[in-house]
Structures are given as structure tokens and as C-alpha cells.
Amino acid sequence: MNKITINKGNIEKYGFNLSYRQAIVLGAISYIFQKKANNPFEQVNENGVLWFGCSVNSIIKEVPILKLQKNACVKIVNDLIVMGFIERHFDCARLSKTYLKPSENFRRYFENDTNALFLDQGFCIDFDNILNPTHWILLNCLEKTTEKAIYKTFVSLDENKILKSIGLIIGGKTRYKTTLSHLVTYGYLEKSEIVNKTYFKAGAKFLECKKNEKKGF
Image (cartoon, rainbow, N blue to C red):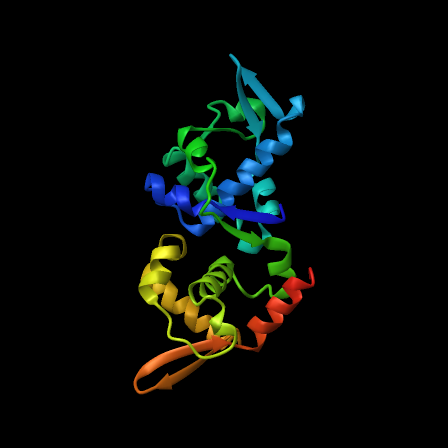
């Protein structure tokens, strides 16, 4: 799964309490469902209801950007079941495989969303495997909220505007400040203090990233 989509608009619309990790794993499960849709050997049909073979290892394989351990992935899958996004077949032990199917919140989450966030997982990993999705999401948000001015000059960041846009996804104000600090440390942002006010500008790594992105890196 190269392209990651986080349906931010539907998260807000329905009040889903989804973290970025849960949203990305949910996207991977949907991707696996689609791959298995035309393979009867990867399905169980019970009274017209389809269940799809979907192991934890197959999910981990689709989202290397998350660097998930098996126990962490199992917890996320269990959380998605509790939150009503997916259901697990009651007799997986007899079937010798984990089978899942979409639930009502799954269908709501994957409705058409004009306010979705997108990540090119392949590009992100190839360019800098140190960064996690919150770093990439914030970089994308800074480009939009500053109308690309951050590439040319030091700008004051509108924290309220940023948190309104991506706060639910990245985990709130504390996570935002931590992620911002990381981007300075890693060379993606430059920071300047002027009259007790903080300003930021795109650093060398951010500019290099955008250059390579345009080339189709």
C-alpha cells in the first residue's frame, strides 16, 4: 500500500476518536479487503455476508511507515473492533485464519471525504525513514496554513488554525509541540526568537524534500 489516506473530514463529521495510527491501520485493512474481494480462497461467505482473511502480519506489511510490532498491531485491531469499525469472525480458531469484515463505522469512515489527508508512504520512507506520519502531516499542514510563505521567510505559526486542522489526528497540543520540536532538530525547520515571539522557516531538509517530491522521487 503506497498511498495512505486519512479521512480527516469524516473523523470530524462523525466524532470518531481515531488516532493517526488507527486511521492508517484501518486504511490498510480496507486495502487488504479490496485485494481479497475477488479471491474466493481468502473469503468466508455466511448467509451472503463476506468475511476476508486479514492477518496481523499482512497488516504490518502494508504500513511499514508505522514500524509496528505485532502486539501493537493486535491492540489497534482490537480497538477498531471495539469502536465498531470492523468485526472479527467468531470461529477463527476452527478456520485456522483471522477473518474480518467491515462494520457500520467502517462504511461511514470511508464515505467520500473532500477533506482527507494524503501521504505517499513510499516517498516518505525512501526520503527519511526517521520521520513518522505525524511529522509528515504537520509539514503538509504548515505548507497550507502559511500558504507556502514558510519556504521563503520566517513566519509566525497560527497554533489554533493548525490544531483545528490536524489536532485530532496527531494527538492534541502537546503532541503538536513535540512534533514541531522534532522537525527543528531534524533540520526540516529553522527557528528564530524575535522580541519574545517564535518564528519558523523551512529548513534545508524541508526544501530538499519538496524538490525531490516534485521530481517524483
